[in-house]
Length: 459
Ligand code: KL2
Image 1 (spheres, rainbow, N blue to C red):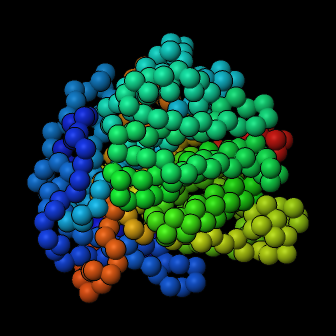
Image 2: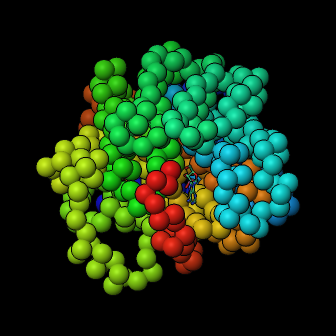
Image 3: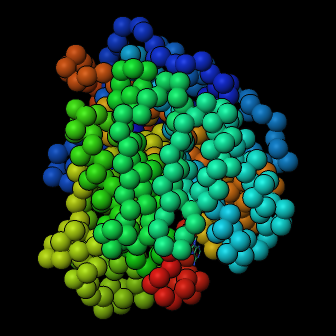
């Protein structure tokens, strides 16, 4: 993204149980600007940021002690804060996206978990770790993917004050998306879902909600688990496009409210699909559908070139990707920022665009596929740093006895910015991201073609 991201810093953790939050009430200081990705039509849109009188956890610029004792060598995760605290009157809302690895998938893909001790793969112990993790970070909203034991999770979450909604995948799949929200503070105004099989876009699903926060601000939240099949970039594009269109319609219906889209997009930060999300359009004629998501990759660039030259899109694939069989450019209506890309901060765990180097790790994949995208009307005030790739590699694969899934939960806190009217002359484009040292190790975010079932039916 051609963005001037806010500087970021590492903060102390906030206690797991925080009182209901309302952001600082001090008079607005001059707002600085965070430039979001430019729109496909060439018109960049901006997300307004405001200084906050109090940061979510202490003085700026300090590196705080890790807040919990190391658990058998698992490094603690730390919050990375936006450098410029906001004085926005807006409420804060913390959102987690977490692919919890369906029990069924853990059992059906033993080849992915060869080095995982059998007891670490057991649902009972994973469930405990997953619930513990959610409780610990205490998000207002939790978007889970790969939930096939919804009852187990929802019972525990209900006891902790969350309401919930589940949307199961169709076909043979046993899992689905589940979203949880704190009944104290969040009120569900509208709920919708997408069953992609209705559009011939495979058996995946997505959820969309409209919430009211603290009786005032409204927000659309989406939760998606995009098709895994690395070869079917056309279907992935179609699923994502539909979610974005539907989220936009709902946001407009409720008065142009902001949107957060959480999920496992099964696409890497260096992929064409990521580019589509962040720049609002993609010319698919320049791509081979098998390489759109970054998950399927040949080791040989020459092969890539040959396959592109040879590659012919069928009408059906074009329709999947762009919505029309005679249109080669996929478009979407949302000017999205990715939370982690906006706040790279003081972390070595960052790769392409400042996205985490890895949110998922098992025998055949180490890389990033999970995101929290958001639109104007919100600013991202902090994100939960991921774990170092070096540490992940030493585990030889997730889950472990301490980490409950083969994905890490990602968490971001969003603050509502005020209406554009009252601060239109307070723009300041001075915030340039200070490049921080990045771990040189590249996440090896590729599946090798030979690892993937040759059939296109991979879910
Ligand atoms: O990548 V995932 O894991 O978002 O964490 O989404 C899918 C894959 C999930 C649901 O379909 O199951 C996993 N090789 C590796 N992983 C697979 C495969 C496969 N052939 N099929 C399904 N999954």
